[in-house]
Image 1: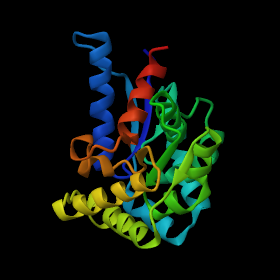
Image 2: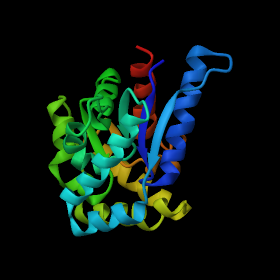
Image 3: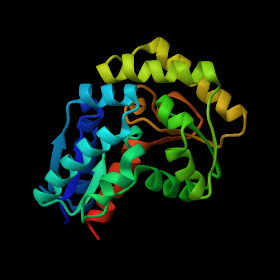
Length: 229
């Protein structure tokens, strides 16, 4: 099995889930005492969030590229950036290393198509919902993408940074997410992409009949598939 590189810490709550999911999937497939070979660098999210707020994407790209090179030097055969938003700089990170970068939006789009969905709702940070680096990647893969209205985008963004990334799972926020998911479904979304790796910690498939694409689980599963090739 190839060694999976994880560029994590954005936030550590979801990176912890990546680690568990990858190992659970490896054990499910290989059985016994098998676990996944993993090389990981976990960054200080405070610094990353500061650069996001300043929209200093060049500095963020340089920082993550250096971390990615450390992961490659540790023996990783492929790389995952364990966050949706920082795929804003995925191309710069990929250019800095010789190993392949497994893009979270590509893995999600493949999952959507395998599930038969062609129109999806997208939840995430304001960068993910409003900028083109993520939506366009889904659209290039043949999907139509819907996002919440401005007020709902503001709520989702606030909940991610001020609650979920701090480990706060509030029932009242879950209800708001479910309302937004229902609205996207009513507008024509056949499924909703949880395009922030923390959202799945709060809202799971058990909470709604609308199909949810948990990008953390999709990304982790695809990594194991690629590592076992």
